[in-house]
Image (cartoon, rainbow, N blue to C red):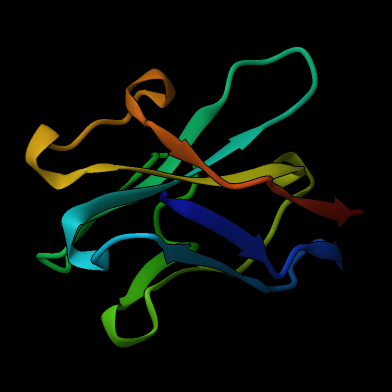
Length: 124
């Protein structure tokens, strides 16, 4: 059974940085496309960035140049380095995974496996 666990959220001032981690178990890490999403109350879950075993990543326009996704296959872990944080980045951040053979997607509904989420709060 595939299981995802996020960590690293917290409270940070605007302009600060945080690094989130997503540990994936229950399968070979390279068999998954893994993505970061975020969600605020009353809104749909939106993609932050998508990563696959090829090592590349796609990012939402709102975070390009500020957020970086990296992947450590040996640790089965995906990271989200968030710099120059803004109050509008405040959200619950989730990692999601889907089987790599299904291809890439930026839609939350296309992901089969989810973590419990970690809260990121950026204060002014």
